[in-house]
Image 1 (tube, rainbow, N blue to C red):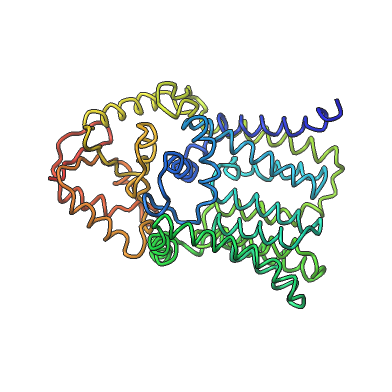
Image 2: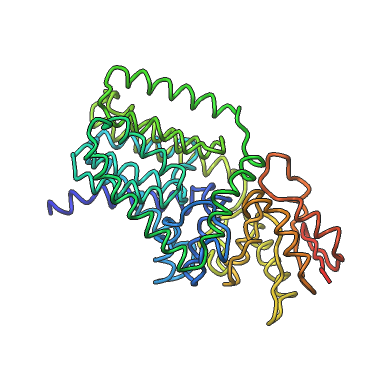
Length: 448
């Protein structure tokens, strides 16, 4: 009975997060979450990151989340269940760090509009940061701390490098302590290097994740956004806190989590930094434990319900019951019919030898729906293909014969200079192919 009572809060959190992800989580249906789902799906069917499909980060997250998809089903609900479990596990460590004040993080994660809890490699990195802070607080083995820091590097290399800084800054006088942490960190890096060599993907990794970042930053990064100035303000607050307690390693880690915003200063990446910032602020919140818990729970449900009403107000919603792998994907009524029709359009031009290529932000949906292999065309973002990547992709198209392209013309025409959609590739296909069909927002082109 005591064990059940202790577990109740985790059972509650799991079902809250699953409900939020399935019904209230509009952002779970968009871009980053779906792309990350696509990465895990690709690995679950035996594809190799970098070699078979583009991935801008180190691959630990999609490998971990591919396990459920491989063992049970490729359906999106498995991916969401895995994320709900990860969110619940995050709170296990948060309760260890902050005790009952950890409930405040429930409210922080749900603000604003739940996009802080969507399943991505960024959230997985945040989870590992929470684990590191727990290990630091409990003064666990330096080898174990270094191991988890290595896992962060294998999740997102830029954050992993920044998260090494607290070890050097705080323990620069203790050379042996630094070495004990670096041994497991670099051991994991060597294992990853060995993996890249064995899978024949080292060149592609260096091209996409190192050289390609110059293209990605040049095309997609807008520095002076409101989020940039908010983040700088938060860094100033952390600096002031640090000046009063220079031995508190929590401030070092929160400060270095600014790396979530590099190189894209968007709202989603800001939310991850805000969550990391709040890890340093929670100890100063003086609400009684009882009020912290219920205030956070009530307002978190309130945010979820407000999110649902704001997005779906005045309209009927439905799940995509007849769409393979997306049966628990909530959409506006009518949108489901568009999905069905688009799948029909795809099937119309699919042959045993060759499948159509979707060009647009929705491409990954139809690859997963049709249980096909993910390739470089499925996430058509500028800077995603390595150095001079757009030119490389156009050269791929030049070599294609009798290839059908289905283009989302609405996405193409509406794309602005700050959107990630690589319109140059679409423009090339339109210019050098023959239009043979059209339905709704889709135009079908044949590259002869």
